[in-house]
Length: 71
Image (cartoon, rainbow, N blue to C red; front, side, top):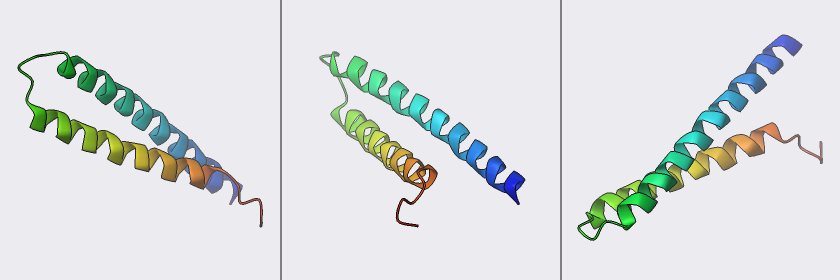
């Protein structure tokens, strides 16, 4: 049973790392696009929403990895 828990934690941490990289990449893209005077504002808005969804997933996974102190 312990092996299943370790595998689950490893997967969650791997996914967390992927999401953090994606979040950072989106942040960089948004910043670069924002400096363009001919920027497509709708594209920036979509990227910001995607970045927020990723941030929500990061927070959800982080909360799953933190043990419940009340347990």
